Amino acid sequence: MAEAQQHVDYVPVDAKDILPERQAGWAMFTRATAWGIVAIIAVLVFLKLITG
Image 1 (tube, rainbow, N blue to C red):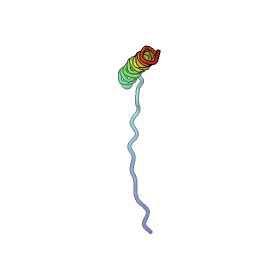
Image 2 (cartoon, one colour):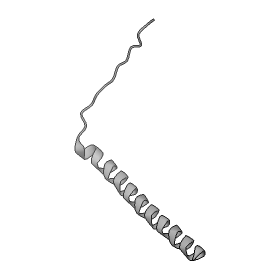
Image 3 (cartoon, rainbow, N blue to C red):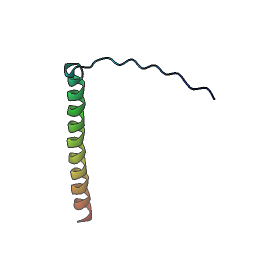
Image 4 (spheres, rainbow, N blue to C red):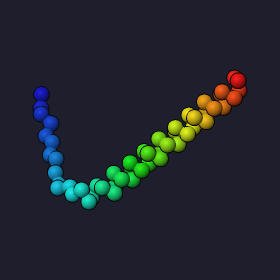
């Protein structure tokens, strides 16, 4: 069986290159988490009002 030849080029990565992308991802995650918590609370309050 032949062995697959692979070649990977590694380039140096500076923190300043990836930091804005990571910060934007974290901001989206925290925003989605906050909206999710608010939505769950709203559903629970709605169910409490309906069931008494």
